[in-house]
Image (cartoon, rainbow, N blue to C red):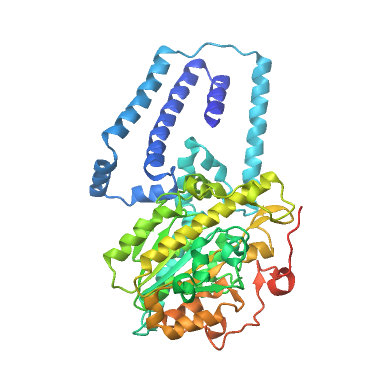
Length: 531
């Protein structure tokens, strides 16, 4: 659309020869953008982003040569050549027709373009002066301006990419300040695994009482099939701290408390475990850099092993359409474990989980439920029930992923913790779909521990403490204190009153959700209501 606007303006405002020159320039730039971004989409499911620019700027001649040899094969070359020849042939054999517009029509078009430009500039200015995030984000929606937007993101003082680099630098400095101040026991567990889900409300899991059988793996443990009951600890009263990924992850991954403005000044999980003697690994199926995931990505960058399925994706909008299924992470997790099976390691696995659009989160073979299976909430119409059914299917696939992850670690001294960053309203909160609301449905998240047989045998006391703590009231931003206990790490930031495994745990802590409501007093009794 922008290309057509530029083309039309060129022929309205300039002599025909100059307009044709601008047309050729526009076509050339568009062709380059098509080839470059076509290659990025084909190879990395990404368009031009600040992370792509960073990769280019950090590449030396040898790396660039190896890249061209590895990726620019004959097939890609022929496709690019075909596009160029097709474009050349079109302009060679189909010349631009000559048309003349009346002065009145030219004036109407010109006035329309001025109006659209004023609206666009006013919107950008409003966002900029009100300090709203990414005021120039609309530039990212067009191939001609995306490069300039990405350059601004890369070098700008207020962009999410600059924020990411500042966070990484800050965590590196924190590591230096904690050198020699952290230790762990000699019999700490070998593998501690944290699986972070996305947008999953616990009340839509069968194992938590939901009507549909969408957690067969977890249900088999809960029903003690094959003696597995002792391997699963299902925490029944856990809430998120915020109803937004960005805010939830800011406090989940370090020693900060929900609401702390200086959350990035607190020691993080990766540095904590690394300084305690663990190797660290991060496996992610979310975008690399962006306002929602910077808290996670900046910490993940410090890990010893990293695998991200979306190497260059930095835009949430792109991520929603391009991110693949969580199952594609499994080979990377398996490979990392096989390469170093005896080392002690903290593994963090970041899933797309049940993030909207729900029907994009699972392969078609997991499309088990449909609108006819949905009875809750009772006031939902057919279209809403169809969407809820896709959510139930996404939960089913999520259960499968947990099963596959457990298989990878089951034969070692391992414990797996799974939780979601926040819940989701499935039309329960005033008929709304999503999670940007202060509600019981966006607060209540699944939290569970899966323990291998070897872990239970070697750490009987810890396993028993976990089982005894599963019904205690908990908020996920205190998770790091629980992990210190499980890993037997000694650090000055540890607070026993925030650890449900400790006898000193404060079960009467006021649990504030979204920094707006007392969950236990104001939200816990909330019932589903239509709009």
